[in-house]
Length: 222
Ligand code: HEM
Ligand code: HEM
Image (tube, rainbow, N blue to C red; front, side):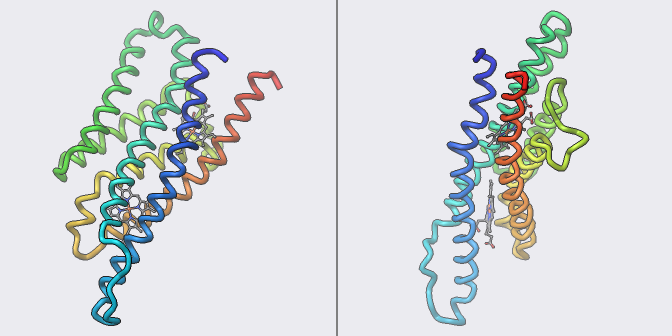
């Protein structure tokens, strides 16, 4: 195993050890948050108080923030492996110094935008930094070396992963909208998009293992 292969292993390892359990926690808290809200709405009808703790909503958002940040970071790590391999194979620092520096800057800008997005509460800044994070991810995704499986996009680890990460970024961007919207429209949008994200995460488990097997077979010359 060469040092560059460490990047290949760290991505699925973080996904399996950290992200997938976190998805379980966030989903459980999501169901509890919804049930509590509906039970509280019906309180006057059946005169019973909800037995679900008041904090479930806050905990869901706390864990949700952690999940969305981790998914973006893990996607960047997934992209870092093929991009780094391409940089080394083509000696990019001497053949195309501009592109080499651009790629490095894009990694830094994307992570910085994600950090600011997590911190800022202002609606407009959330929009700006969510857009920056998303654009950074997409630009890095379309660099040479990334195996996108363009002609089989419907079973591509790349397209599903980028879409899942963009949905997580969108969830971060609309937190305040969910709380401020009395019509619950943002809440419904949030639920629909994140149920889609759950399906994409399942697909990532399957397509990721397939890609690992394919890389292994390729390296063994099979
Ligand atoms: C696995 C992905 C997720 C699913 C399936 C999910 C689903 C849900 C559901 C069902 C609710 C309750 C809606 C209701 O009251 O009717 C909810 C609430 C909420 N979610 Fe998520 N969510 C996910 C991830 C996230 C993430 C990543 C964030 C933020 C970064 C987030 C932020 C929120 C907020 C702010 C609320 C409102 C909480 C409250 O009313 O106290 N969610 N979500
Ligand atoms: C939260 C779940 C995950 C997300 C969002 C995600 C996202 C990504 C992204 C965006 C890439 C770069 C594009 C590509 O090369 O396909 C990537 C690469 C990769 N991922 Fe994942 N991934 C996830 C889970 C997994 C899992 C569970 C495995 C394996 C068990 C895995 C294995 C791989 C492999 C082997 C690569 C490199 C593929 C290559 O270089 O061609 N991923 N992932």
